[in-house]
Length: 102
Image (cartoon, rainbow, N blue to C red; front, side):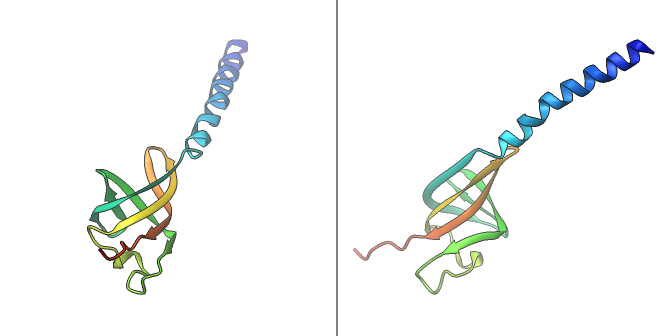
């Protein structure tokens, strides 16, 4: 019985040490700008990396034609920031960057 209790205690201590690792993954943030290579229903690809768009993602644009995520098109220049959770890149804010006329 004593060995069983020691084994359970050891298991709980090991599991308690693993908990900080899972929350630390959510602390990794990113901020990038680039050209959209592909746009999906809830994702976009920039520089070969897929980024997930959450329903709560804030969209910023001075162009009235770019007020929803579905308005973004391949080739649009965007700036975005977000966080990485379990290897998935989630976007918190995305801003449309209109290029000045040449």
